[in-house]
Image (cartoon, rainbow, N blue to C red; front, side, top):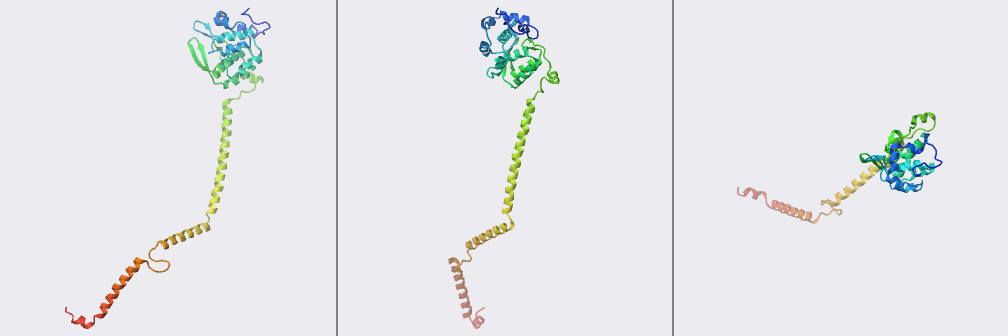
Length: 286
């Protein structure tokens, strides 16, 4: 009873949902201790707690032992939860392994158009995922994992059901063209560059108006006035600092002394030259 599919489950791709997992791996899951101890009587609600505790994704490891991730995937195929519950699994951003579990279940059970519409937005998720395989643990990312679900034939050691290519669905009109994030980024960058160019043009117009106002203020009349003021200020400084003349016209004390001394010497020389007569100069001994 524990390994049978729930009553009223719908056939997926014309067969029992559990048969989407290969027979060898499915039998090993039934014998796994994790399946017997933790997956018994799980529901769509109680399975969330087990998915939160996951530490890695993957199929089988070691000696063909199934991972806990694969055991929970088979349990989802067995209980077949509703579509709204699976979408809630995907919207839980905090629990990346719960999202990875819901993504692989949607890929295996949903129609092609719904698979592309639901899983392609997950390509924006770049969080790290731990992958357990035959060689041990490896590192992958959520976007790489979702891309492998959309394009690879085998994921986590399970053969994925065939899916119609996106180009065919676009030609049939079932889905619209895919929007590239790179194109959105380029459009956002172009808008940013336009805003920058607009701000630069406004700055250049402002600086041009300022330069015009400065050039108006620097007219020839204003330059002549400023030059005359500068000349007058320089002249006043020159006149006030020059020691030759003062405003009253009287020479300084040092110059008056030198002038009086020179006048005294000249007067003495004149008086001496006048007191000597020509006769004395002739009779004077040679």
